[in-house]
Length: 278
Ligand SMILES: O=C(O)CCC(=O)C(=O)O
Image 1 (tube, rainbow, N blue to C red):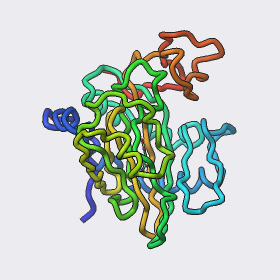
Image 2: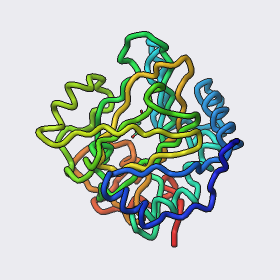
Image 3: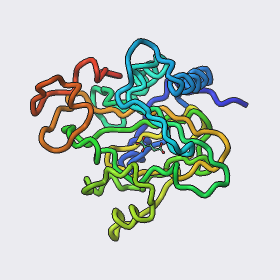
Image 4: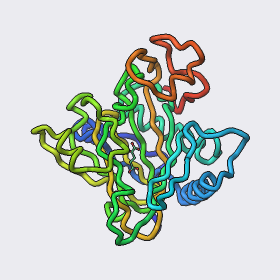
């Protein structure tokens, strides 16, 4: 029987405890089948350059000569209405607000990710290296941010699903942890584990379920060894009031603050829409 989406789900004390202990939480199904279908079509459209409106995504996809390479672009919400409705969904915002125990949630940026299926081929082309998202986001005043990774098909390790490192959000920011594109998982594990307990937890999701991981949680993923592409929509979100920390690290979002951003300027303009406010 088809699983129903739980559009009125409320975060429980047990969910909060899981998130605080493990650095991630797996939601029930939050997209209904119709939304999943629309978002799968949105993938087809954005990869073929068929955009809503006349704009471009933030970091446009540049086709690789390698057909097995991961495809991704940022701020799909600028160019596709179905992606916009999902990554700004107040329901998702409320789930995050309750996990972080804050009053307001805004979008930091989104990602549209496609990992090609390579079947039995031995290749690391689809690997996403172990990394911390906040390793990329140090221009933000808080690491208390969340990545909502939404599966558009059943996802597990066979199709290159994500793994998180249990409890690693408690390790703090590890230097040079912005290693999404380093595909040598063993080398990265060696670099980051540093005597700490390294427990790799697969995020096993049914289509329409999402994993919510903390900005400091190490995560990565391996090959998609099926013959179908793995599709996802990802919302990176932050508490209201998050502001610009200058002089630390470049990020494309800094430019969205205007030509003369100032230290302490809140990320609160139209580029950072509010998902939820109590
Ligand atoms: O899609 C993946 O396998 C990894 C995505 C990721 O690192 C993220 O969304 O933060």
